[in-house]
Amino acid sequence: MIGIGVKLNPQDVRKWLKALNSVEYRARWWLKAGGGELNRRLSVAYSNKVVANILSNKWSFVPYKERYAKWKKDAGLGSEPFWKLKGDLVQSITNFRESKGWTGGIPANVVDSGGKSWFHKLNEGKIKRKRIAMIGTVLEFGGDYTSSGGGFHHKRPVLANTLDEFELQNYSGIPGLMMNDIERAWS
Image (tube, rainbow, N blue to C red; front, side, top):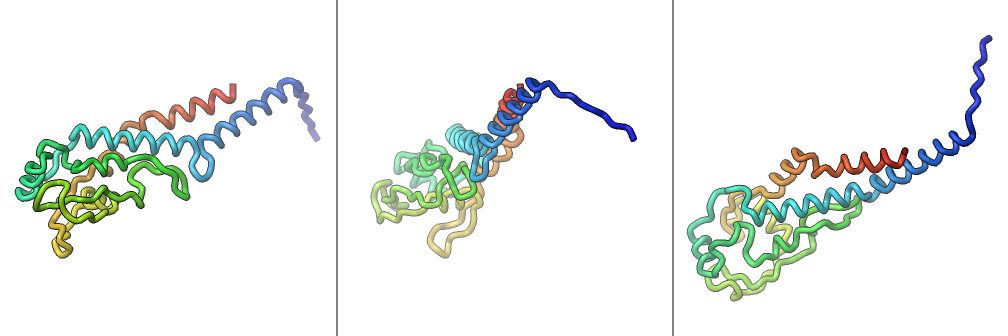
């Protein structure tokens, strides 16, 4: 039988254990269940990118129906980006906590400021208080809402296009930042 003996320097062992504890602490901070710092930073960066893409008119989509374009022009909003009416939607885009962590987008319970009339001026008409997330869904996926008086809407997918772009741009470098931080904890 062959035996191998190893003698470790106690100072080195303490140093390794301290480094391992530090790595574990940083990894938990970035990746903890319920949304760690990685999840939060990604949701902030994505939300900011969505707003920037909307405000810059980054993508061109099928133009509005003439009736709606005329109404928007008559209401003084003819040159506004396609996602903007009173600004409710863009102002609602944020990062927020949900049960499984952080999310970037539009919280489900936020409603618009109401008072929009498609036949008169912007601040006239019955206050409908539509959920902003529903309005965003209609813009994102389009659909035929004529049976409920909403008309037909072409797809204008800013959220999905931004997510694709965010992925292609390596999530604004946030995963690399996380890995560098954890790596520094070892040294």
